[in-house]
Length: 298
Image (cartoon, rainbow, N blue to C red; front, side, top):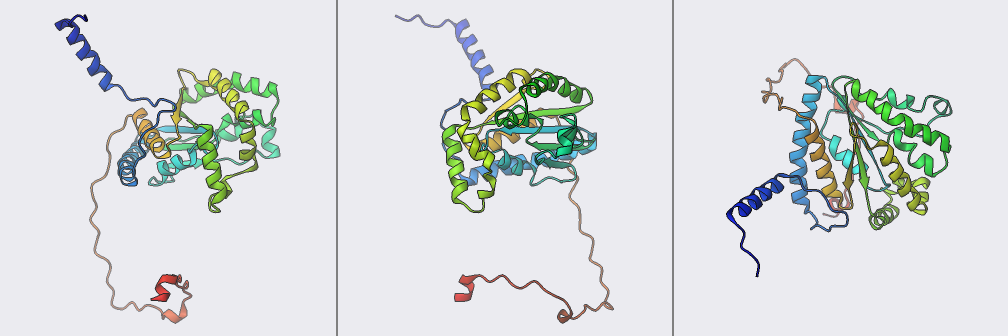
C-alpha cells in the first residue's frame, strides 16, 4: 500500500509544479498538435507583428546592431517566416539579405568578405536568408568546396562570430528542421503550383537524393558552431503556422525592448486653393480597368 505524502512532500511537489509551469514549453520532435485555424493564426501573428514594430523602433532609437541568420532544410519554411517577420517593418531599418551564387571574383576573396559588407550598422536589423553557413551545407555536400576549405571554415567561424559579438552585433541563429515527409509534401505542392514552382531549383531536387549527407553535414556544423556565445536555436517546422509564431516570439524574447510607439497623429487640414484647375483627363494616359468575368456576366 502506497504511503501518503507528508505535508512537506506536498509542499515540495507544489513548488516544483509551480516552477515547471513558469518554464517555456519546448517542442518534442514528432509530436502532433491540433492545426491552428486561420483566425487564431492571424490573431496571434498580428499581436507579434505589433511587438516587432515596437522592437524596430527600439533598435533604431538605441542604435542596436542585430543580425539574424535563417538556415535549415529546403522547404522548411524559412522564407515564409522571414516574410511574416518583415512584412510590417520599415525596410530601411530591417532588411533581408539573400545573396546569389558567388561571382568568380568573390570566389577568390576571403570567404566571409561578401557577407561582411551586409552586416548591420547602428539602428539596423539584417535578416540573412542563408548565410556564410552555405559552406557547411550545400557547398560541402555538393562538392563546391574542398575538405580543406570546410575544415578551415569550422576553425574560423567561432572566432569570426566572436568578433561580431565583441563589436556590438547581436547575433541570432535559427535552424529550421523539417521531417522528410513534410519536405516531400512541400516539394509536391511546389511542383503542382505554377506560382510556387520557381522555389524549386535543381539544387533542391538534388538535396532529396542526399538527405542523409545533409543530415551529417548539419550535425558536423552544430558540433563546431553551436557555441555558448552564439548558439543555434532549432525551430521544429513541420507545422508552418506554429513555426512562424514561435520563431518570431522567441526572437522578441531575446532582445529586451521598451514601447516607444509615438502617440497618434492628427491629420492637418488639406490645402484648399480654388484657383487650381486639374488638367483634362483626356490629356493623361490611364491604366485600363481589370476585367472581372463575373461582373461582366451580370
